[in-house]
Length: 156
Image (cartoon, rainbow, N blue to C red):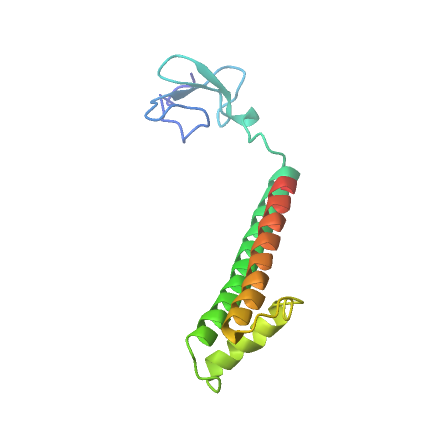
């Protein structure tokens, strides 16, 4: 070991047990300023710092991060669609004021998100018709977002 270098605690080496008081062993193969072997308390050499890296390549790591971000966007958007449709059903069944700006906003977006489910079933009661039409649309968006999440996670 070069003079004056002494034993130094390691900066958190991968695969090292918690609480390890290992140190960097300086050898003649590594000039000062370069790392050598890391020895754990058990005396097992964990490897050279210069060759220690993640098992993921940069491309794979980037693909994983992009897939995670895309999955988050899909989850949020799908959840928002379902929330709007369920809110419309709740506001309608609860007898909310149709002139209110919140009710109008929710009704506007719910009409666009219900796709072709309006009039699919024609029960006599208008409340049941609202629940079926917008409930099926909410279920549709829930399933679509779940399938897209599975596909994105598999590709990522």
